[in-house]
Length: 145
Ligand SMILES: [Zn+2]
Image 1 (cartoon, protein in one colour):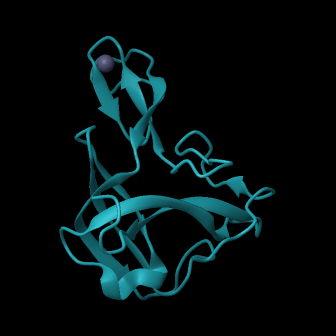
Image 2 (cartoon, helix red, strand yellow; image 1 turned 90 degrees about the horizontal axis):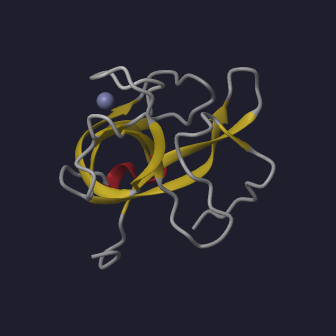
């Protein structure tokens, strides 16, 4: 595991994922509309369906890799080269979310792979400040089944 001291590094997009200070697995933070009972990620300010305000809620951090791509062109925001993005079907919430995938596990990415969320220092904020980003990584064999 690549453990990093992430104390001083701020999330790239606060309010869209948890940054646990213990062994709790990180989770994505979405938006829930009480009026029409819709769930969103990333959290919108207002519900796209009924325009009511949404409240922040956890939408999970485990799921199944639906699709992905490896981007080998020059990356933005100091991301590693190559970096990976894809869609993950989250367990429980029914949400399909788009996000970063573990650039150190490119060879292990396969459609249908079980993945879990990690939060790590990756890239910067556009002004050179390191930022924490959520990143899905494949489960190890036998993990979290
Ligand atoms: Zn709504």
